[in-house]
Length: 168
Image (cartoon, rainbow, N blue to C red; front, side, top):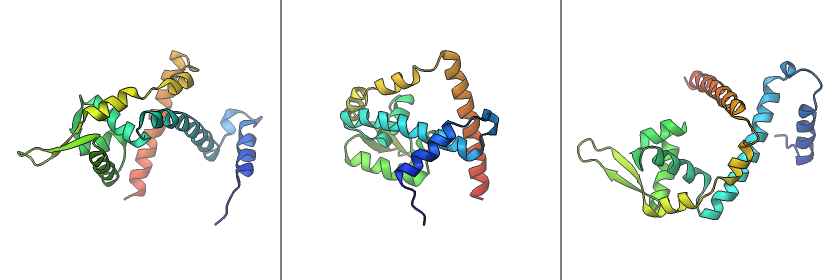
């Protein structure tokens, strides 16, 4: 296994950012590096804020989904919305139950668990700020934000399709 040190990584990234050719000449790996670097910087900024409020990035994602569904939904819905595997979400949900952040309530009629946010989690989620995210994305005009979302949706749809083909 080849290990690339941090300086080599920075050099590779700098080469890509400084390409003089047109944007059309960027290959798939170049685009992935840009996406990965942007993701890392944005995520790291947000993680620092979340830690201060006492929740992890993964917990915040689950809590965000629950707030979208008025504080309660199913594990299947959370998996679908987050695009995470059911067993990964289940493991995280079980840890969050132990931490008192959510409750699993079994519906006696269909035996499906409802995942419900607790007051403790609601307080932590509300305490978490999105100032870093707001500062980062304020660099985009409303038109650029829409274009950004449109491009990400397009890439996400294609990636989901490719992933489905690979898992068959």
